[in-house]
Length: 463
Image (tube, rainbow, N blue to C red; front, side, top):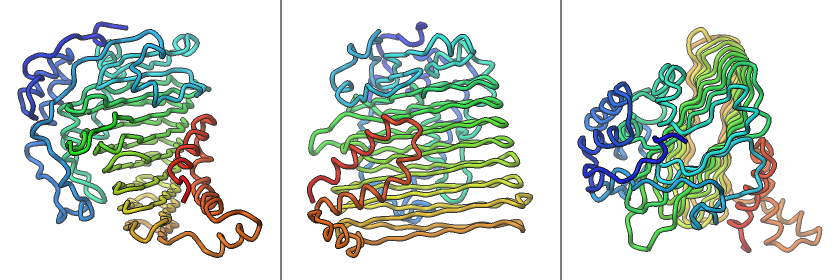
């Protein structure tokens, strides 16, 4: 571990509530950012000030209610946590949330932006694989970081349809604290997954992790990216944060990427991730949404090279008054590219999902295929799903389809299972489990698949 992982104390500019230019500068100083990184922070702050706060009249935000958002009393960051040498030494609140039986080749655990635990197999280090926290990477691996950092999600990001005008991405650019850097050199296969856990432990401080993943030419990687937070107290404002992930998959490389959002019900947050793929590259991306009171996920795949393929899958299970605000983009920028997107939700009580997805076939993307499906299962009459799949086609000789469905559990299917001797609650449970299985089965980590199945089973409960 380098000294960038173990900074102590907070400067005065970071101990006062409020999101200010002083806090942005103080954070860069405290983290020891190089000058070029501080310039990016400044650009993010200027964009945050310039871009209006989205409202229900803003395109891409018409179904997003941000009345829960309160930034006045927010601390820009939390005090640094203590580095530990073993998982058993992690805080009890985090250990209770961890699944420790996942077979992995490396693990990075961050608490409020501080890397508190890091491991990586020696064999991978010898092969040139880099797995560390982002702030260390700025100093030790600048030549690998600088060409990619804030290129897919720049400080002032206004890509237009179908999502947002970059307001909260700009806030992350200004206040990012923590995050992972992963680099897999050419023609290298990482057999077991790399895993990162971002834990927001402080109730008063914002959390702003930012990660950069580069899978170089002809390489293969399985990556698990987990987001967690502490439970809250009734009547307190929601814990708030904005995360960003930039992923580059070079020619002929493959990435299996699982993004698991399991924030507590006292959290409201944003997660924006964009993936750029080179020629003949492939990504299998699975989005898991189980937590948070409000979460907005923006997941974009940018197919820059010919012959590229992207599978974008996701699931969410909502209960209570949870809100999942999901935006996907399949951006075909070259010929003979393929995308297959499937997002499934099951909702009970008064929970809600608002889904918007776009397949964009750019000029010159002939011979491409794009598929998009959003399936929503309403377990109670009070649950609600809004679904807006969209196509934008600017070339010929392409095939694109999109679909969405919203409805309750099929009574015919329930009756069939009950006629085989199953009680109704068990029959409904099996149908919900089967509804999600096409997504869960695509997760390239068996232990994680089982944990997601168990988490969904616990949410279903005894209806």
